[in-house]
Image (cartoon, rainbow over all chains, first blue to last red; front, side, top):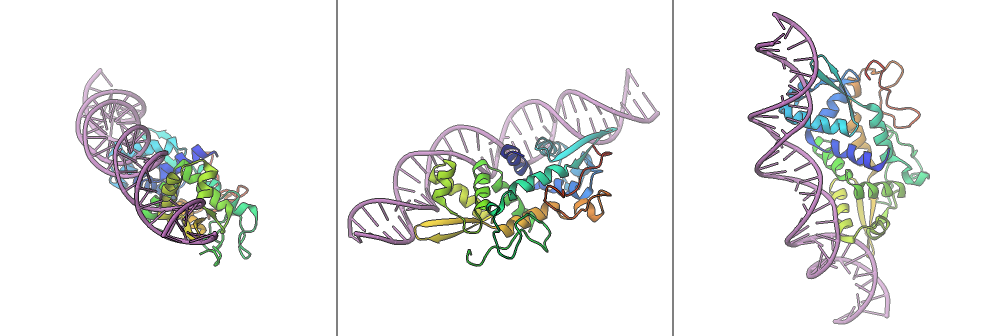
Length: 121
Length: 121
DNA sequence: TTGATATTTCCATAATCATCGAATCATGGA
DNA sequence: TCCATGATTCGATGATTATGGAAATATCAA
């Protein structure tokens, strides 16, 4: 994933409604949700929602497929993984950045990427 | 981490220079880098870099400390973890979203969050 | 205090982005 | 074909954001 794609993806998520939509889709799973349901869920006019969904799709964060009259949107989990991988890539120059924590990115709250060292704050 | 903080963080990263700075800092590790070095590394005027660093700091993504005449910036790894956790929270409604992949977010390329199912694409 | 260095603040300009009603397009049933 | 439904495109408006030079602030050394 290159920088311009990452910027586009981050910019797409950096907006109230789009962030909410993306999370709904992440939680909805691969089956996704139709545009109308998303608009109603967030209380946003259809034309506005369409604009935001287009942004997310153009950023490669969501997939769309038509099902009869509805257009179903779903999260692109692969893109999400690439995005987060880009941010943590080569963390701490590849060296162990903290004596007690592994550098390879792990999102689980129980195993944070690493804790800042005291001598830094 | 609440939505407004996440939006601020994502918005801060959704800009060419700021994304580049953040990655430099992530790779630099907890020791961080002075503002001047960042400006020079990216070929950006000092005043512009200062603006971008302020954005990152205000978004809670970087820490700053003064060291003599320099101001040293470093990545806030805790914030980064919270940010990514927010995006993947309650993925697929907590249910196993793919029969062969675990849902808890894992960034390692070898163990992606999960793969989209064929019947979805 | 004077001078040099490092960084930030101020300011005006230009560019990008969000909103939403109205019009348009696509689909499917009667 | 006609109509209803679901969604997108168009267009004007208002708001936010990026840029960089000049001036101001902070630190340190002599």
